[in-house]
Image (tube, rainbow, N blue to C red; front, side):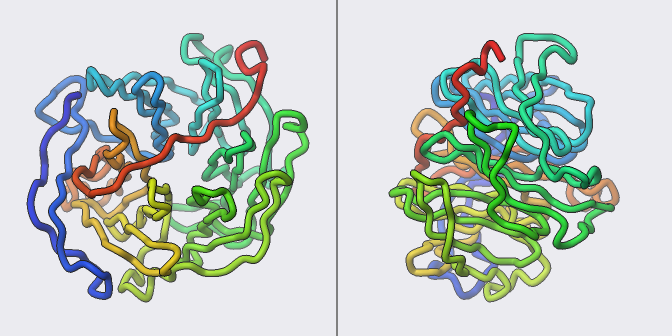
Length: 339
């Protein structure tokens, strides 16, 4: 795989109250197709998801309205342009060659091999009557439901609060989604405990990682409580964004405007370590690689500060963390290839 080695050194954690003061780890960036000596840069990378079967990483560039596919073995990035509006989410579908994508407030099946509008098949639309809202995050659970959240109208970095919601979508009733939380401001990171007894969730402006008791058979959540408030670790100006879980049940959270990824022990309700990156807009994370021990990190850039952050928008990997991921649950939609 083609990477540019960027950092391989001891780096100190930004938050003084974590359990470790420093740790050896390696950060790389994915290379550009055109120039392997330069990183590939995107406007606002998001929603990385690892396909273990094909050894591909899918992710989106929200504002460019693109879905990208990184071939791990060759390092080459291919692109599918949507052109309907912001593309915030891409996810895998069980037993299907297609992917699930979110465009504005619609969920679509995407056929990578088909050109033009025929590549998309609309499943459902969320936040009816809120045309300026956007789908912002989505993850599948062990039963194949797709949990998907929205955000309110956005202008620049400012989002109107309490205008959005968190839903779940099932194949049998995909046009009639189930509402779980309302109001929400910016639905973000979703992860499920390894024993499927808990769902972790982020509503970004709250600056908290929260947990719910989770009934996987019924697809219901209850008992909302706070696991971590990031302001207690010195991240007063940051908001938690994308999130994933490792094989120990620990959470890994990207901090938008914080330039870091936090490793969190949810049972102890403490930050284990904070991984600092050379960019401030750290958007989302997922585990991947042949051994599932590489943490992919998407980032975004602010056009007004490109000189200060020339690597903003790069796709990073963090290696040698001592942690590994778990297989990614997929959306169940049995007739996805012919829908």
